Image 1: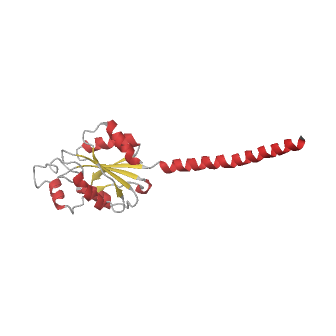
Image 2: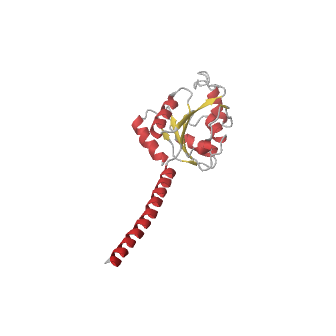
Image 3: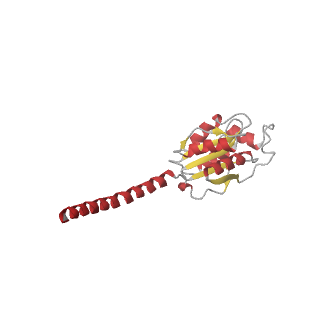
Amino acid sequence: MKKKRTVWMNLLLVFALIGGLVFPVSNVSASVNQKKETKKVLIVCFSATGTTKSAANKVKKATGGKLYQIKAAQPYTSADLSYDNDNCRANTEQRDGTVRPKIKGKVKNIKKYDVIFLGYPIWWGKEPMIIRTFLESYHLKGKKIVPFCTSGGSGISGSMKGVKAAAKGAKVVKGKDLTDSSAKSVAKWAKKKVK
């Protein structure tokens, strides 16, 4: 009887040791997986009139990411944005396509972000050239770029080629026009894009 009890006690001790080794390891791997799933999000936007910034704030609220606003070194005036004037600054830049307007400031430590939502207005069917300045200023290899825009009717499709060309090495996914989108629909879309 005493031998039987000792055998059972030894078996229980072995199972307790095995359980003690297995469960902490599984908890550690679960926390490592959880860390891998949490992606750092940056929302970058250029907004000359405030419309795109409003959309960017909805994306920020949905993702909890950090918002960075692109500011032109030489700010755009209302005369610069007078689209009915063929010679206004915005129209001239868009026609040229090689112009890279200078940006005031920089994103600190862009390396730490995994997903970058990139917002801009549509100017003559494309992204403003300052967006190309931004993309060409950073090493974006391996980052996921999620474009979004505000538009008077052109939509985002005409800007995708330029964004992809300027974001060398990044994975640029299909963008979305967020003009007049509700906070709820933006949240649903943005959360899917972070995955």
